[in-house]
Image 1: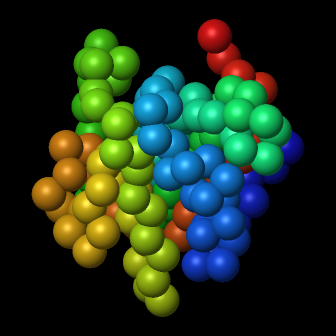
Image 2: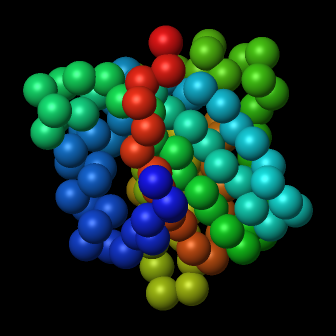
Length: 123
């Protein structure tokens, strides 16, 4: 399944369906190029009776990021879920509740466009 682009309306519906990835788990962070990063989460999907699925977010045009190494991903606190913002010329994904202040998050990625892909749960 190809990456689906996100806009403000589809983002709101997706985050509601995934309860902002609260209590999920970061599976991986993969730099695809100097300006493209994928981050994979395992989350519960309300639309599927709270079954677990994986969601991959791809941020293109990355201009700023604070990432974590693979060995600490599972220890990062996901109790507040994620913050995802889409503006006219910028998008951001951050770990935790950081609306309007993603630079303060322990992990964040800021770029120009954002897409996602749903995948089967990876145990």
